[in-house]
Image 1 (cartoon, rainbow, N blue to C red):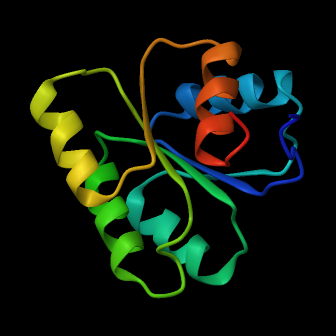
Image 2 (cartoon, rainbow, N blue to C red):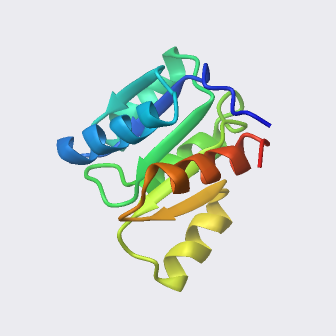
Image 3 (spheres, rainbow, N blue to C red):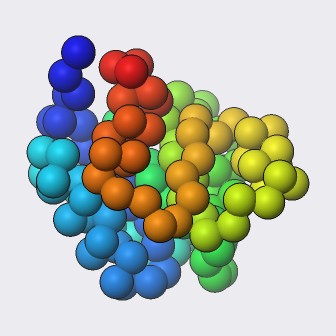
Amino acid sequence: MALDTSTNILIVDDYKTMLRIIRNLLKQIDFENVEEASNGRDAFTKLQTGDFGLVISDWNMEPVTGLQLLQQIRADIRLKIIPFIMVTAESKTENVIAAKQAGVSNYIVKPFNAETLREKIGKVLGHA
């Protein structure tokens, strides 16, 4: 089954280069509706005013981390259903467990390619 590439995606990373990389990978798999946030606080504000079908967020950010952003989203009655993919350079078991407990939809360890991204998005959007 094909992915619905019209989904609005919010990508969150405090590193501009990583935002560009993720945007380019999304473009390779035909996702064009991509908005960026440079930290968790900015992302949460955009989520409250926008209409997003997926969040792809880095873990390590200041002042609000990806995990804190995930917890805020899951605690919000309107936002809690949005699929959330956590991106991190660390695959420590305790991090994966913390993210799962917070309600993460899926997890990607850097570095990754467009095919990995497509597979993870397919799983969280129900098109695996």
